[in-house]
Image (tube, rainbow, N blue to C red; front, side, top):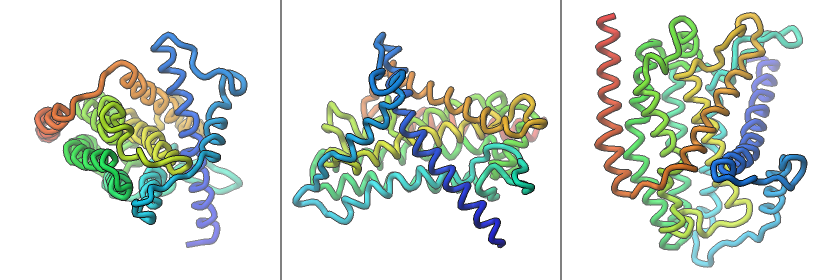
Length: 333
């Protein structure tokens, strides 16, 4: 390991973290503007030109909000929970490829932090860690409604996690690899996997909504039932960390869907101009984020028992059927 390689990793990590934090801030603005259009409103447009400084204003407000800790809370775990929730949403970016090699300052640089041969397993492992932060937040608050929200998150995760994992199996079988870089390269040689795996793509999107606790699967923070759910007792920046995790994971889930099913950074002229790769991936992420926001603005929340039934009785059998059909198709064709 050379010193130059270490510096390269540090710079890439800093860029990915900066992208995640900036993306979190402006995804909130993106969502508010899209929801406003859906509801025939204007949306935020006062802070800065076209409302572009609204995330900055929100951040300043949260920084200066009073930090409260319940008297009977487990203080260490109460403070640890937001950190455990937001860290996985940042480190999940390590294996997502943004493009092909580019030459900068006479050095060939890969547009990803790491290409590991078990990249899909890494994604699943890291994504499932965040639920611990939610459960700990509910328990450490020493309050009934947050505890219910944390327990709901656990039950919800068990119901969709199997389907989420099985949605990856089709692309893995077709690409014959769990490396995200090789999955993108396989799509360049054949076709985008959304054309070969439409059922797997739909299952992944539905399970991805549940993964980030988005409507209509936002049971752990159902305001009408739980007064805010697992983060009821949180305020200030601790409260902001939970929403930072949610929005960064929205971007990450969109990036994973784009990488595994929509060709990743593939697009016209990428072979000639590798710098276009990140732009194509970003466009696909923005389109998928729009879909998530649209769903939130149009669909009501599922009833809790119906969510469990949907996960176990519809999503899981459909995911197993998709794996079966993919395996049969590969054997035949």
